[in-house]
Amino acid sequence: MNALFKALNDPTRRAILERLRGGPATAGAIAEQFQFSAPTISHHLDLLRQADLVTSQKQGQFVVYTLNMTVFDELLGWLYQFKS
Amino acid sequence: MNALFKALNDPTRRAILERLRGGPATAGAIAEQFQFSAPTISHHLDLLRQADLVTSQKQGQFVVYTLNMTVFDELLGWLYQFKS
DNA sequence: TCAATGATTAGACAAATGTCTAAATAAAAT
DNA sequence: ATTTTATTTAGACATTTGTCTAATCATTGA
Image 1 (cartoon, rainbow over the protein chains, first blue to last red):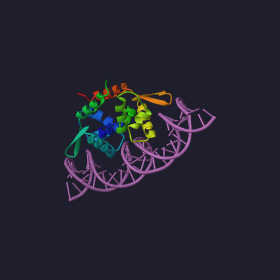
Image 2: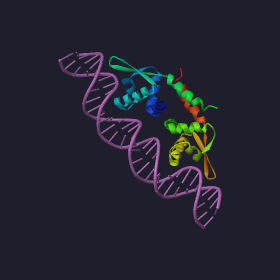
Image 3: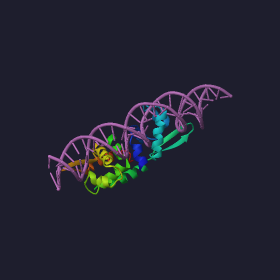
Image 4: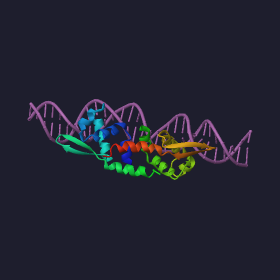
């Protein structure tokens, strides 16, 4: 839960998630969309992976990142307790 | 949106929200539940207010904090775009 | 009026965060 | 083999964050 909220607490990481809504993408393809350096994006991807919001598969020299939506259920559950 | 995720990215603040689920409470009553100093809790409440997650009304020398659940709709909306 | 109570503000400080460049690793292409 | 390409790791650095104590503000009570 901590890792989840931490991962979501950054506009770049949220933008990465929205990008991955359109389908899996390599680290490089994701990085192209942003003005930040590749290492910075790599670090963001790492935090998203720690929160299990994305998964990664190595394909040759590329690393493909995929959105994992099952984690959102946990968040929805937490939110639901406030719905009265 | 930034202020919302920022406010949620702290276990103490999330615990405060859960506390307020049971009804409004004064700053002091909230602070009693935690091991942190009153100023620290006051600061957390300030961040929650900035995110519009709570509202505050002064009642005499007390300040009563109330959960504002309407903001959760914004979050639900953001989450919904990932539901496929 | 003066002291006590509830709460916030101000300022300090260590820890965490987001960014960068340089270096390392691994696979592909020449 | 060597070089290029894709990505991550390591380290540095400024900014932000969460906490504290001390001081201030505002209301209530003696």
